[in-house]
Length: 107
Picture 1 (cartoon, rainbow, N blue to C red):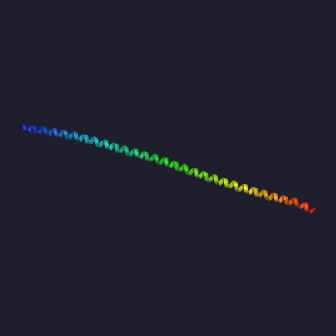
Picture 2: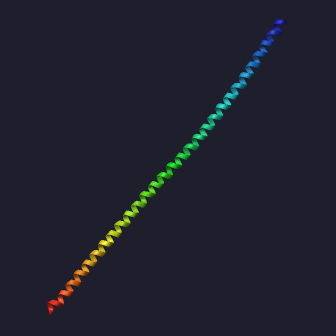
Picture 3: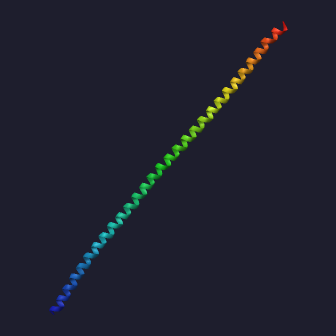
């Protein structure tokens, strides 16, 4: 009978140890899962932030290039208008010179 009691005590201690191990592994698994979730969420937020920063910088670069192209187009248009105005002034001056020479020749 004593040996049966000792065997029962050993089995009960073993059950307690196994239950403690089970609780410990549950805590470890819960902690690991929590860390994994935090890592995934944090990584997603980081990637989202980096994507936003990249998009904004790319958009700003495109806007700057567009503004530069518009400025170049405006400068070219102004240069063409100035050239046309200079040509027009030259033609008018040439006509005025010819008109001034004609009456002098007629006299």
